[in-house]
Image 1 (tube, rainbow, N blue to C red):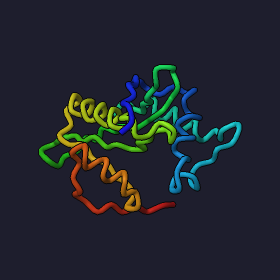
Image 2: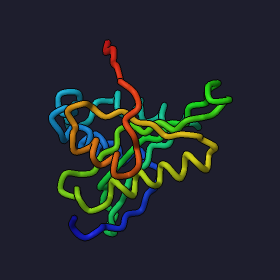
Image 3: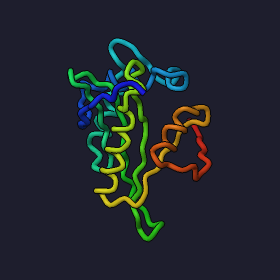
Length: 156
């Protein structure tokens, strides 16, 4: 592994949306789903406002020492009745800028999210990763996540 990069993790701001969308689009699965246009489609900003206004969702970015956005993730706190009324944390859209991978940034983001979920009373943290993302699966297993479910998707 390359030298570990220390990052600052903070809530995403509206002016981070372009950086986040670029990271979401920067892979074979995300590329076809996203629209990197100048200007970005308004739908991204509308979605950001909905996410930012939801007290159970935290969209965060990782900034390097120069203030550049180099990673992101979304933590959703889901209240529920199962497991004796336990809440769970759901990690979504964990991304690190391609030129910054293998520097420990993703690990810092995930560890932040796990700590945050625990502090908010969650009894577990879960995530989905596409079955073709073998490197991501190894990464999450190294951080202590275990394969537990079969995920299914219905797109509209």
